[in-house]
Length: 122
Image: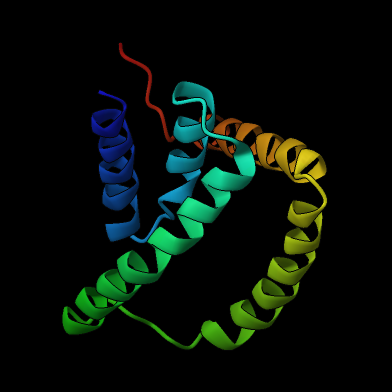
């Protein structure tokens, strides 16, 4: 039964990855909180799953003409630096990274609420 739940978590992450939103935002918390997978294992699973899903999503977005590569020169260098920095924290047990990730998710939710991303019913 756990395999079914793991597959469901992967499918949810795949939907987000296909939209270009980063499937790990959902997959990692699902694996850790709902399926009792360790955080480092969840991060590893997400990294491995990202390679084929990211490639597939990029291919489809390129094919559909949805890629504007101009901002890439500004986004890629800091993304690479922060990836290396976060990997250092992840290798030391992940406690700092886990707290930072949790704070990030809370900040994204608050920003979404402040921007009206979740419209209220009248």
